[in-house]
Image (cartoon, rainbow, N blue to C red; front, side, top):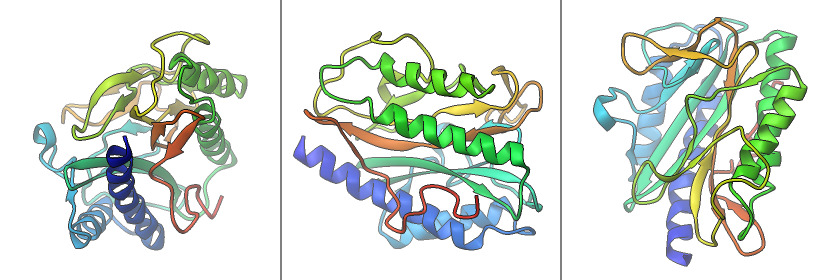
Length: 253
């Protein structure tokens, strides 16, 4: 367990560092391709590899999902405008181990509704992570997220979930972001997985565009997501993808 935690922490710190750098360039007028190039370069400079690049044919080094895009948005020459909100999802591979994380960024000044959605999404993730402990049930994660989110009038995406991670990008267990308290498999010390709720301001239904990757809200409502890679300990949990610059949450919110 010590090796898996230390290796994941190293990969996770690189992924988190890439997102710290993204914070420095987010502004009206940049393209999502510029974000992708920055992430690729940062990860490469740290002698690591970008896990999404060529994964099942995915063409870029990160995912950039803005406004009503739920996840897996492909970086392009799309320009970001004042008021846009965007999730950037990065996974680094270092010494064969993966670290996966994503954050929301605000371009300029966004709407009050978007700010609330971002805050509720982040709070739900962090409070769900605090339920993690060996010998408890994985369903408590989704139960906590769903309870918080729906109380605020938002909805939890069902079509995508968190996942086990380590030497493989995606492995068991699946981590649902909705569900019943004390349900699902028992958490064991040493397990590593992601918690990554995707929360919509409207209904939870999504659809995937013709590119085979980009998932959007069916009703074109705003969507937000945060993600951390976490490990289960005897007494609780360890987060492997925290920002060393305390930029886990948008500084301009």
